[in-house]
Image (cartoon, rainbow, N blue to C red; front, top):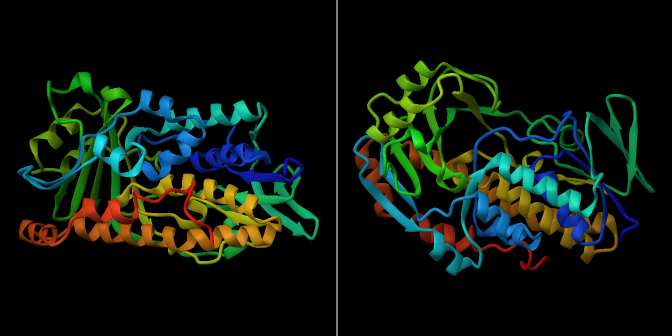
Length: 394
């Protein structure tokens, strides 16, 4: 297998996780990244057991635990009074049920750990300053083309190049995204800036008409992550790095719970980011005979189920297993796609449904909806219980 070369376009979380899963399985891997340096933007990220199985398999379990936080529970609250509507346990109970922990950490910390792990397998694994322009495949292999007119040749190509995937566009064509009507704010606040015993160390979701807000801790509890979703007609770029005025953030959450007001008031007013959220239709076919996709390139999702990174990590592990199970490349890529398309589509669809759930038009509607559903029971049944390392591939 070591003589089968796999090219990966994109050195984000999905690309790096896939690289290590593939190298651990015995494949030769090269990763090409358009940026001049390895870095990750954004703030908090959540890893449930389904992703942590893979990261533990790669030897990163302890390191992730050291830089992350294990939240005690998932707590749904009303946006103004803070009344708890529903709660289900995480932390020890999540690990007891699923065999791996639920951990929240900074995206940059996870990206750094994945980059270091990939370089343990192969020190020169990542080639920077390589902007992908397309690929050509033939009976003997696949050629990846770059903007500087150089090329890379391999047996298989994986497009892990994100929302605006060049590889994906060549495979599936233009898929129009539609604006959801929502924009997402993100800020982080040092816990030292907040009152003592501020919010318990849980995943707090404040739900209200026209929006919702999520608060949880990072970096061993030293940093509070805030993501606030508001409904707005003002459409901006789908970019995590676009800054907006603090005054607009404050106005968007006027009348919300005092804890939300405190977080916003303590934010760095020059570090308030907001981006528009778009629906990207799930695609059912994302492979050719030698090329396939993973992560956002194949199944971009809204953030309302906290599974975007987890899906990408799952993808890499299942792909590595499929390539070991099937000697024929086309058959292996078909096996991979066949075993991922329904699960990833379900996650995308459930994430979209959660947008409706979190933005119900009244407190009465929220109470009624949560009285008939148990979020924890549902997620434990099908989402968190999935193990990419052992699920049968058929």
